[in-house]
Length: 202
Image (cartoon, rainbow, N blue to C red):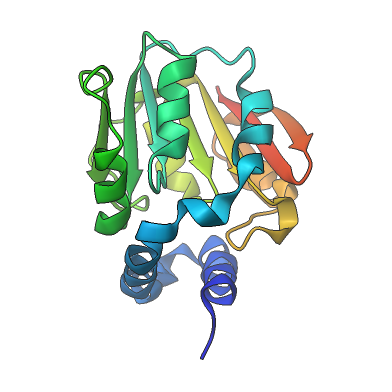
């Protein structure tokens, strides 16, 4: 029986190379994260936001922010604190994760932060809907990211344990994929063990 970490890495490596295979893995990955949701925050550790915070330093969020693969909402809530004028949406494939995130939402933030169930391979948002899109330990679907990030907007990938993160994509691969889809101004960040990659949509 393959464990959750090995399965997550297998799915990531496969889907990044061949996105059409996502439909084969989607249901099982959703069920796995539903099961992990109640104890998820015991797994991510204090280093979870380290490199992400470095990558976001100086990155403007003009209005609409998306935390894709939000899990229990840790990153989305951090983004809401960092960008107090922005509207933040946290999206996750797992209904269990989204329910955990919603339970943490304070009345003060409820007016500009929301959590939704969604599939990152096909999101229900218009083209160019977000000024900032963040993926933390999340499988990237490059075509969809190019569609939803606004012109001049910022995209950040973060991996809380660097290359040891179960869901991990090497920066070289993402630079290549994103460069072909109109992203530039790449920058890499590290806060051991976390790593991050930032890019701008042209």
